[in-house]
Length: 174
Image (cartoon, rainbow, N blue to C red; front, side):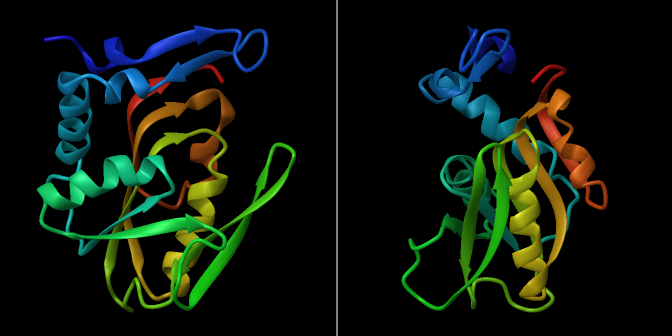
């Protein structure tokens, strides 16, 4: 069986010269790659006590839902502003050029619930930092943050140093 990193397609000079884009669509397109990714993410949760898996739009949904299903936990979507139909809370975060805003339903995390946060990638850490703020605002505690990949050169982990963060694949560059 191939290693998980062998399913990740590398695209040189995208989106700009000198950057190697790590494409996970090739992981998703392979039944073996997808199973391996989910299994590895589930494995790092062994022994972690938690109630809810939360995932950020949209690739956090792709990985978070099967993790929640496998471990028989609830799943909470963290969405881009304006996508949720009920009363929400929100948090803004900075992008390279501007800012964005995420939302969660006000009743999605109950006080005292323990949460595992899932996403495909940690780069600068802004998206997950905003997600953590909302979870804590609702009274939840973040027990672990799980990423499929980490671009260590962008130092996103430093923004999350108070939390237990794990990435399945780690790339030193950007």
